[in-house]
Amino acid sequence: MVFDKNFEEMTDFLEGTRRRLLKVNKGSVWIARRGKRHGPSIAGYVDFSKIEEMSTAAALVLAAEYQRAIDIIKSPPPLVNIRNWKDEVLLQLYQLGFFSILGITDDALAGQLYTQGDVMTLKILSGSNALETEQADQMLMELGRFLDPENQLPNNIRIPLNSALSEAMVNVRKHAYPEDYDFQYRHLGRWWLAASANRREKSLTVVIYDQGATIPVTYSKMATLDHVRKFIDQIVAPGQKQPFAYDGVHIEAAAKFGNSQTGQSHRGKGLPDMLHVIDQCQDGRLVILSRGGRYVYNAGGRSSRSSYHRSVGGTLIEWNVRLPDDGPGDRND
Image (tube, rainbow, N blue to C red; front, side, top):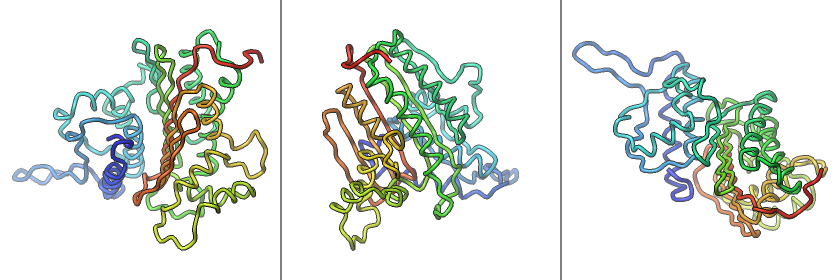
């Protein structure tokens, strides 16, 4: 389960997972007893025993789907054949706090951040309000201090590094769940976040997911500035029957120009700030999956976009940067 390796198979699997987990009615039970002659009946489940590999991004989306099912049905879906799961998959989900979301393990005393050698990991967080966003900011700042304990990063890296993720979470609250959009599945109006910092490699990886209306839907309504519309209109051709055909274009526009409708330089810069940090560090990668679109930006300005027939079920952002040993720029405030 790695989006880079098999995007279409992954989105098919996730769509099937949503249907299985949400087919149970609110107040129903997942496992029903059918009498002495018959074994228990399971209303819905997903078997992970065939999964060979799972990325952090995939684990985050799965956690969001299970949390949605728990919230709607008011009980956690069952996990089956756990003894047959691959050790790597089991460990990945455990370290990210997946089982505590389902109430199977109690990791409250272990804390949200844990360190193993040169790696600090932020377990899966979810939020929707300003307080939860602020708490996530504090966790991410801890990861930053772990990577840069002597505060040696120059301002042209440190400032956008700190602000980009805050802006991304604020954007979810403000734009991802419009009231006038007809969602296929009931959403929770939340974001999900996981991250890790590797001190030896001086790298930071952050993954954010939401179940919202997606960038191709919301950005096309928000992109009112002339230069943004010109960029989109030069590529998008009318009459395309495949509804997701230009999703990658709208994601690229959002990453390049941000979502500000006013043109003010300090607003709507979450995604552009992520690109800026990659360029300043000269090493990193940003991958955005939203509805059926995919946009990839690599250090040095190399980018690509593509579109698929199946939606990822929201917007997934995976940001990886490797900090320079001696970054350029002014270190003073």
